[in-house]
Length: 314
Image: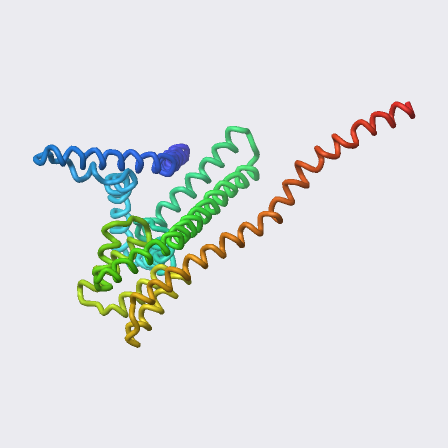
């Protein structure tokens, strides 16, 4: 039992280290890629290992976690009784959530990582209860608290990743529309304008446009590719943009004017959202003022009077 708990604790610590050091590893990898590009410009014969050029998280997934997940997947799919469990792991809703969050994981891989983290957190709760000499009821309580805390944190992490990615796409949309409009006004076609945007900008919205451009290059119609693009992003502003472009193409309206109008509308919508947030600040700041500022003011104003009252009655 102690050995099983130690294994779960080690897996939990390993997953926590991946989460904590991922950002630092990505930053270090970006610097290394930049240095490699500079070095390649002066030494054309320089070759580097492709595995080392991958980001830190992808390297961990490729070298450590993914082979382990593949073994579990083979074991589940071989047995007919456990094949239904594997199919439940691959539900479409979770796949869409992972894609919207920008996580390069399969649904079953994410489910297995989540199970390992939750089990490790429960094991830590059980170990803490044992070390603090708690009774059996508290052992179960601490284990359940560990399970619940890990489950809640993972749910919050996935939803926060989705909201951050959607916010990033919303912020980048006016810039993308401006560049598309400039390229179309310069004489490029809509597909060539999208290619120019994907070559000069970076971000989640540009990644989605890159997929759309590849689909159109492989033979999918512009209408279908744009509709799928709007469904993948699942943002109202992007769906509005897609609808206007599709309608303009069907009615023969100039895409240049549509792009210019859409860019202006997106900037106005963004300005309205910022003004709405600014107007909410006065209400949100009321609670900190009541809790922290008003008591200090009352102490400064009423303090001397209270001291004098006590002196008079004392």
